[in-house]
Image (cartoon, rainbow, N blue to C red; front, top):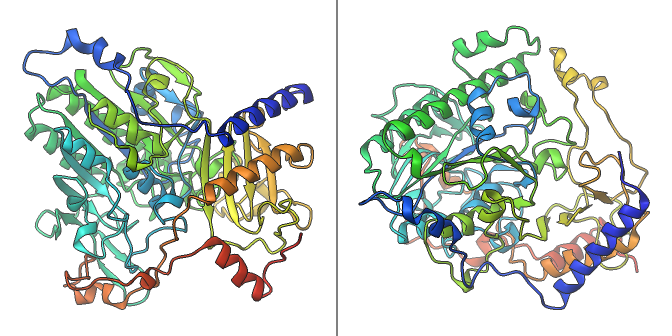
Length: 567
């Protein structure tokens, strides 16, 4: 139910004040003197010979829908996740990006996509592209602070040259896949006809000898346990465990599938079984932390990388949209923190948080240093998580994609001459959320959708038909988290101010990196393995990265008659 107009008006006024102070130069900073309450409160409890730095275990899961955890009312059983979240802090106003590479890049750098050049889509297997090397990564910062850094699982941040590989970006060890998806047992992946190869790596080499055809969730868990067993718990460790699950293809051991015979939809049944297998994996990790002496000094973070994909069994109900969209169902994530070091355990946080926040938060917890020239977009949110304090974050730039300008009726007129609404963009400021362009798949998909075998039967979905020419939306997300009531016509002054904010953000954007496929990436030229294909002598020219400039792309589209620039 919507708040009263008076409440909306007060929210609008508060928003304008926030935005005004931003324009007047009161800009956030994640630098300067760091709060020491966390370390001070633990000082008397650190064992002799044990580091005061906490162990950091970051579990990233793939394509888990907002509803697909027990404590969000799902029919899928997740007792481990429920227990860890219930005795930790549930993050119920936590945002990620709508796709794999964007979320992972922002976790690793603490920076928005517009500041790394990865604004558009994902990094594809055959593209000569990766997380730009000038960005100092989270594991690099923690390694400088004395951490042992290990990665197990899915990378998906590019690998076309050796410098892009995980072990060149701050991880002491890496075991996992470089691509975005693949077979859970054989670890093969095709990126089109004739572009198929093996994708399981130990360090920078193919892991043929370690591959026993084991289901990847089980295999990655065992590898993580082995790392914990061999490491000295008196020394700080950062373990980034990025599961392939529950991304398609829908594959799962039979013993988990048997638990969900009552679900008639085969996609949903397999997906549910994969989530249960994932829950068991997290249970084994938590047991290993206790068994090997890490638990009492550990901060465990659990996060999905984006929303669920309904066509592959995922559910984001009651949120709108799906993976790949900027509706809440694509970007509001399952997330929690579990740690004996939390001040207030067993709580729910509704403080505004974004995946970029983990970078400054974890580096600070790890007693690392942050430099002003890093220009981070993330905030240190530890006090908001641990002590229940307000979030320091006033807004989130979900993205500005200068390449995706498919809103045929988008125009400068619709954007009050401030912004071309053909451009796909999304911004959250306080309670307000603005979307322009084509935000992506926009249906609400209720649970009964999964009662039929054919998920494509559309009459089970709640669909909405916008008036012709629609290319801009405004929602009060706090009052209307399901995005059912568009307020863009009721509050044009809020729309204008948010468009100005988008414009300000866009002035800081770097050119978009989205190069075409490179035939040399074909695994057949690399022993049948997906891996780096550039040599030390191969240096791409600037024009090989196909940079996109927003204003130039608008002008180009205008010449082709695709946009209407109206005053």
